[in-house]
Structures are given as structure tokens and as C-alpha cells.
Length: 264
Image (cartoon, rainbow, N blue to C red; front, side, top):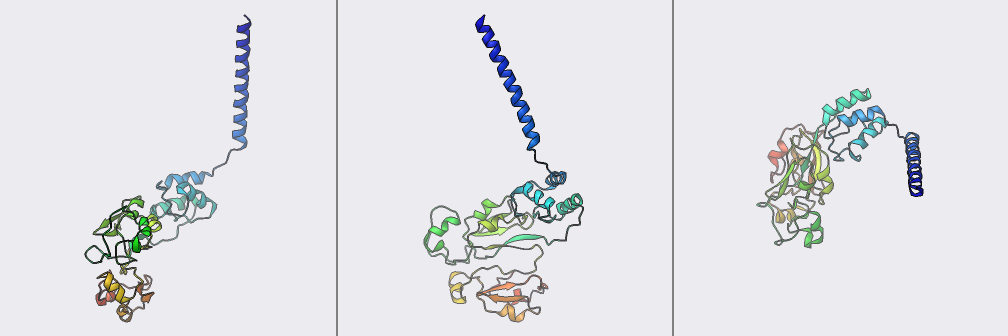
């Protein structure tokens, strides 16, 4: 009998404790509840949900919070583009600014048949790992694409592939998230306007003689493109030609005159 009484008392105590704990948790939940702006939730529902980080924030929820706080523009998402920006603009009651659609571009044309190798390499096929091998990798050009595909692995949209030893971006699949740019140890990839008329497909800072020895198609900084550009859109800096996309009219003279045919 005493055992039954003790068991009943223990059960009652446990029940009371459970009730008190539930009340405490309920009170705490209300006391420390973080209010979420309804607009933030609505924006999260509009964003693609890739959480790629291309916007500069920690995932889509981070961007949504920043937009609501006024810390980021409504067109900050590079994946969603103009359609998503328009929807977010409606939620926020503002008109999104017109943005230029951009895509990633690999500044290298040193394919297997155009570039030379200093030695044969067998080992881990990872671009970052090349920092620990002689001369930064087997290719003679220290500025070119190594072709081991770190950018391919980083791309969440399957928009970049290795073709004949060089990374090539699929413009239609690219969302300009910047993942490939961040992972490339050679800083070969940059964002350019989707409708860019002409781009220099080389990144070498070496002088012309050294470039010619390493790659058949590298920019030799001869300046012919600069002299022939009627809109002053081409300049040579650090032994490499650059095209100002805002000044470029797409006349094609630079590409026509380039002796190395390195201007697309």
C-alpha cells in the first residue's frame, strides 16, 4: 500500500513539474519571440531558394532581411534577375532599377593545342592544389586556365565545363552568382555584360616574347587594337589589352586587326 501511495505521489509530482515546465516554455517563447516582418517572408517566397551567396549575403533569407532593412536593393539577386526584382519591388512598394544582365567569362583561350607544358603532371586534379606543385602547374603560362575544374565543381547551375583544357561558360545557364570567380586561384573569371560585343580572352601579364613561347594565342600587348579603335574603348595595361564595355560600339575592328585573334 505504501509503495502504491509513493508511486502515485511521484507521478503527481512529475505531472506538476511537466505542467510548470510547459508553462515556462510557453512564457519564454512569447517573451523572446523574434518578430519577422511579413515582407521578409514574402520576399523569401519569391527568391529562387538556391542559397548560392551570389548576392553577397548568407543565403536567400539573409538577402530578404537585408532588403526589408533597406541594406540591399530589390534587384540584388543575380539568379532571379529582372523578373524576381520586379516581384520584390511590388512587395516593397518600389520600382527596381534597370540592371545589366551579366555572365561569367573565362579570360583564357589556351586550349591543349595552343598552349605548351613544362612537364607532365599526374596527381590531384584540383586548381587550388597547383599552388603546391612546381611552377604553379604544368602549363607554361602562369596566368592561364589549368583545366582541373574547380570552377565546375563550385557552379551550382552546371553552367561551366572544361573543354579542351579550358573552362568554358554556358551563357544561357550562367546566373552570375560568382561562385566560379571566388574559387579560381588564377583570377581568370570575371562578370561581363551578357551582350558584350568584344572581350579579350587572355589574362597573361607577361611580355610578348614570353607569351609567345608559352601560348600560340595569348595577347602580346602589341597595341594594334588600341591604335585602330575609333571609340577609344581599348587600352593596354600590364601587358594585356582591356576593352571598356561602356565605350565599345561593337564595330569589330579590334578583333579584325588583332594578330593573335584573341579578341572574341
